[in-house]
Length: 231
Image 1: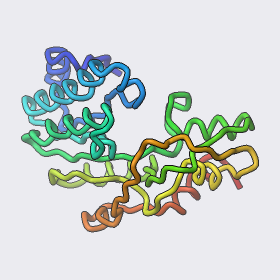
Image 2: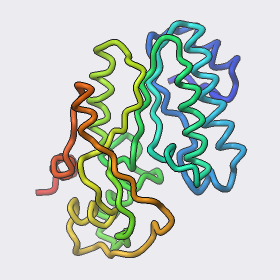
Image 3: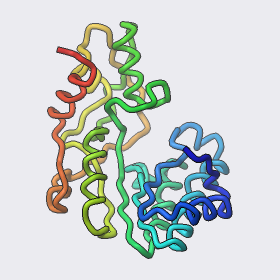
Image 4: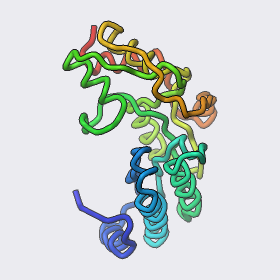
């Protein structure tokens, strides 16, 4: 691991020039929606200028870019969404190819099990058997970590095609429905929490048309239950 400051172009350019990667997978961002609303300057500096710096450096060394974006980029009501939309604009100036992967809420095990990810709330709920309340109002199509990983592997095998690809499952659901389907309904409650968000339906079959793997909601739940050892 090499510590870098993506808001500092000279820092980023120096490190990337030294290691000269063929592909840069850019996942660095202020992703907490509430934090972006509170500190708009930091959100812009990190999510927009940071991305601009990475793309400029990638162009200098002849690298392609995989940008981990968000479906929030389609919603300009939120500062986070605005910054991701602006970041995507800079990624599209990549000279040596890019792929923009727009994620929804991410579910499935990852190396960080304590951050603010909604899945970690379910994980903590399951491990500690403490009752939690989940939103049963706003519907969205989740993204599964294993599916995302497989998409990235497939992209790396072929020539970059300068696409914007939403990575979601085939079904809309609420946080409560996901938690219920993963860990059962005995220690969860339902409430109205996400009451300021718009429902967005994405045609997940477009991945198939791009010769990439699709993922069903039922398979996501099945695989996550296997990850957690739930019978």
